[in-house]
Length: 95
Image (cartoon, rainbow, N blue to C red):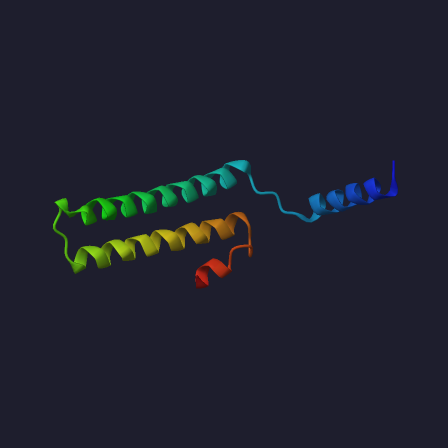
């Protein structure tokens, strides 16, 4: 084997030793939460679009409460993204 291949293998072996193992069920559960929050946000946005079409009467309170709900769901989505990939999506909090 080449020296390069040996270096790669050594790096992965070292990473496996130091990385803490998280059960797949936990990772999959976090991923499912991300999908759930994303779907809820998309449903709320679609509902707002439908109501904007003119067949419904809505007020500022509806807009505020729905936007707050969406903001809360997006925060939870970002939190769970950062749980899957620590420190990779921290800038999303500012956005």
